[in-house]
Length: 279
Image (cartoon, rainbow, N blue to C red; front, side, top):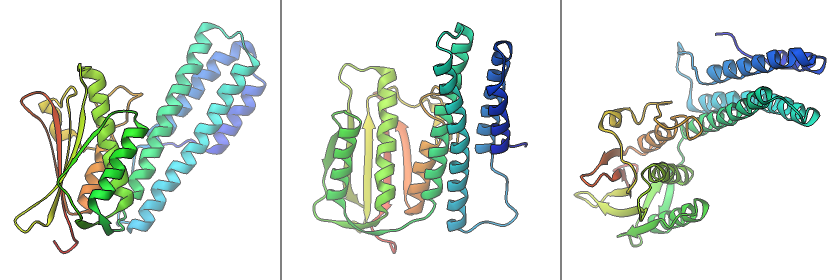
């Protein structure tokens, strides 16, 4: 697959500076094509003959995100300069610029999620006070999403070996999914509930449950939830990497995850994690 290089973008910008009014719309279409090509390159990964170690793989994801974001920044700058220099653009050109800006936002989100996926491939488990940690993360979500999330816990002073960075991304991603579902269903009294408790025959498992009264998950999509880049959301809402990241985090902790829509139409996500590496 051909890739978009910085030299291509630089050459394109040079042509933009000397373009006539008649050439501008054609150049905008070319900019859109460049962006599409860049996004396709950023979401297509070649099968490797030999597996990379996790550190190298993380660097690869980080490098992809950094380089593609540089191209997005260049194209966004071109759009902003055009809008400043030409305040009286035709409706067709103005609409094209807005579409390019929307595509850039989606592309930047794609690279952000790709870089995060690279980061969660490596695990750094340390002993964590479970109730303190999950209560804090729940409070952080309540504030950052401006939503009255409920936190119910049967935990006391138990500790578990978990990766703090990954837990701080696991729960917000699930909460974000719940908020999207609630926005679609628009229930009279929207709710998101986070619950934690200890379970297992030897009381050696952490159970985390997140439920909401949103639109639920269609049965035909349950088995596809964790496939990277699978999404039923509008393009501006997500790219389908969130649940793949969640699944990777659960896998990193030797845990299990199960998603279902109960008889009332509410979505319930259940996660079980061993409290220690030896469990």
